[in-house]
Image 1: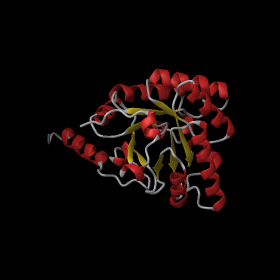
Image 2 (image 1 turned 180 degrees about the vertical axis):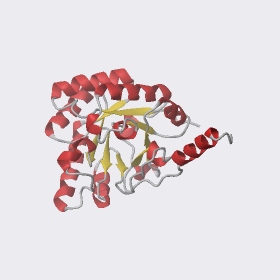
Image 3 (image 1 turned 60 degrees about the vertical axis):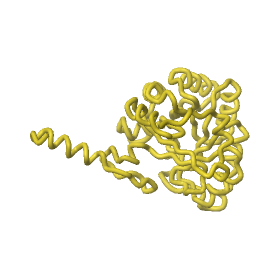
Image 4 (image 1 turned 120 degrees about the vertical axis):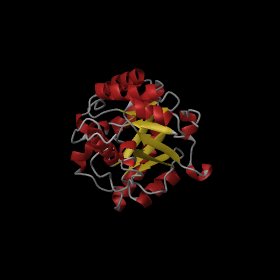
Length: 258
């Protein structure tokens, strides 16, 4: 059974405390996985620039190009025609306002997705969100650990643990809402800070490694099913080990057992 496709109006007004349930979002990168998710009750799909790490083998998301995001985003949308699909704007494509407008429009048009996502809440990013929403492109915000800025941030760690860091994140979230974002991803944000942000925003928060006091959760399907050789992040408890299972099946095939 699959749910009816959501829209930004419904998502924008979604709060877990009112609905008694959380928004469920998974990140996927390919047509076949998208076809599978399209047949489930999943609410949203993210085509993340984490495709660089998970599928393309890059060390960081910084290497991912706009054309790569168009390729993977289009494949997912073709498979998940009945789902609300969000695609990441990759690193370096929205450093300047005009570049951001041009590249976001190209990504949005080419993939046929319902929205784009961008990281950060600096003034030029807020202006870009305002302009994109004015021309009809919905934007999901993203604060906390922002992988595109991992070198500048100094690595992967929990954000919002100090008072100043917490207040900064809360203010950033409010600015994203004011700029027109219909939802905000909180990645690796300290749980108490996530709760304050969730309580103070009228738009939903979607957490990844940010505790349970958020309006929704997003996980990478490859981590959830353990499709790869690496151990998933600590906040993800895999529900299977498909990497090992596939390996065992192939070894049985090669040995003639099946």
